[in-house]
Image (cartoon, rainbow, N blue to C red; front, side):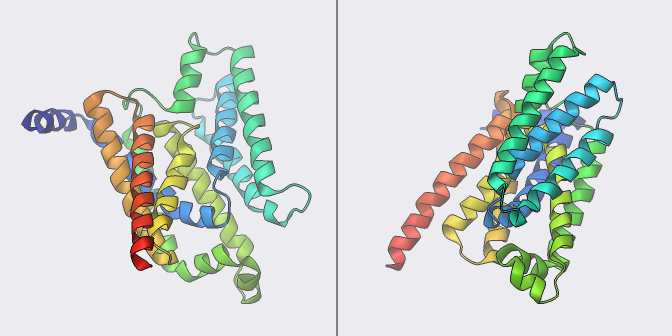
Length: 284
């Protein structure tokens, strides 16, 4: 056990390891807070649609040779997020169908562009790294840390200041609109924030795994708690602990960061399922 602590302390002496821990915890926190609202609004897989959209936009930016691909990836992802959250009013194409359409189309377009307009000698490696997250945590910079800190502070303040509005928009948009709440504006805010979270999280867990950061904490908390506030708080704690444990295991065992975090999330979800079942049986 002492060897494990010594090894981990040694790794903590490197700035990029500290960057990964900070970014991972903060991004997981933001994703979990937004995840509760998205899961309750039945937009659980919006993370998949947006992450694949970001992958397609990233491919376009690579082909165009942009030095800062975020300038293209972020606006496109935000526009798609707003579009997806507005589909609940569309009777012809439901939200889940549109997510599937955008997800598959963006993924296919991105992979096709990277193959036709080859910009790297290792296309398969680059695609695998983008989809599943980098095998190394060397890719995170101090800029990612400050972006994550600013984003997490904004999300927390957003939830604290507009908690009642978010609650109303989450459960009944028609009632919220009738009571004077600007539903469209709040949906745009939520869409914009989740798009930024997904673009940043892609550097950590990859585009195929990013939706797990949104889904698992919220679903796990719902196995045990019933109130919106309790689920939100539990989801945030679950996400932070799972992310931290996943990255520690990844650092010590040398496993892929994204996949390790998700496996910890899955294990935690199973524990909460058993705990929720035990509590329901006890209540009877």
